[in-house]
Amino acid sequence: MTMIKCISPVDGSVYAEREAMPLEAAKQVVARARKAQKTWAKRPLEHRIQLVLKGVARLNEMKDEVVPELAWQMGRPVRYGGEFKGFNERSNYVAEIAGSSLAPIVIENSSSFERRIEREPHGVVFVIAPWNYPYMTAINTVAPALMAGNTVIIKHAAQTLLVGERLVRAFVEAGVPDDVFQNIFLDHDTTSALIAAKSFDFVNFTGSVEGGRSIERAAAGTFTPIGLELGGKDPGYVMEDADLDAAVDTLMDGATYNSGQCCCGIERIYVHESLYDAFVEKSVAWVSNYKLGNPLDPETTLGPMANKRFAAVVREQVADAVSRGAKALVDPKLFPQDDGGAYLAPQVLVNVDHSMPFMKEETFGPAVGIMKVRNDAEALELMNDCQYGLTVSLWTKDAERAARLGRDLETGTVFMNRADYLDPALCWTGVKETGRGGSLSVIGFHNLTRPKSYHLRKALA
Image (cartoon, rainbow, N blue to C red):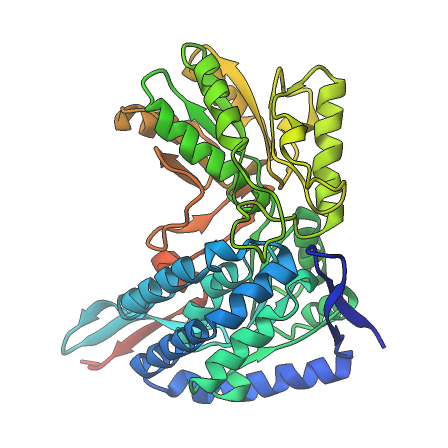
């Protein structure tokens, strides 16, 4: 018997554990989902939408349980109130556009022909969700998949073991049929075996690059469509005409919020030489104001990283950069709570360059490097010098300049004067080793369905 355990970053204790489901039992879960899908898809679209929204509302009613659970599982301070703002915004938006996104494309409707393209649900959608934003990342696929007529099976990361269980409970209590939305606990081998056996009609994975490669290997030859959101090393670029204080506030928040454990968090910043010194000084002051501590304490503004092994990666990258000539500017004495384990002080590094893994490999922690640049061409070359491409944050008063740079940037999203935000009206997507596919927006609905063409000839004369 394999047990899946959540080790709490708060105190290192086993916060929750569940038995991994054997392969044959997991196949039965899939079979129930497949049997339920046809009936679910035949329900009116508006009925499915309303049931999903009722599930969202039911989860909101569980807020007093959900928020401390998140703190115990992955360390986010309770003062931030969970993920309900983004969770609700995304759910409500996809509900608003579901009808238009799934509507047939009518080419002709005459006395002679009906020609149209309709959208059909894939069938059984498998969502493998991450721990860093376990509710928001999951709902990106769960809500539109269910609305489109798919059934959904969700598997959550061990670090947020209880999230899938709670999501399904909320939706079922709101009226979504049991077999339409199911939670499952699986080990990696069983997960791969299910994918290799063509158990699912669509697989969505958010996680590490190596995890994405494992999903692709398991699905090889099955022709199962896959959506992948993997690593990131998102840059910011502060131009000479930027609003300096706004840039510092947003980019430092983007680099350190959630202990830097954000898919689109800012991990490297390039600043025009005319603003560099002021930007660095203000950034160090900004980061130094954090209060590191127990996430259950309402006064804590920076909690532990989700696991001590994640914090170890950050420490190793920072130490390596310093050994190569980088300079760490945040005084560690300001953060006596840094215990060498999951509790990690934030850090700002200068004298960095792209020979250092810290500036090219994903850090996923509250540490950021800042480099001086002379012009757009230099900044562009550095921003593209990376194996990832999720978002870029450009800081300027000139939208035309930002758009011009954006066309040459190898990224999924170009932000101007903001960062670390997912707009549900836009497609969330990446390039290079960040993955493939896209969620939310009308494109997200299209990725969760398949086109079927109808060419109906009415008259033979």
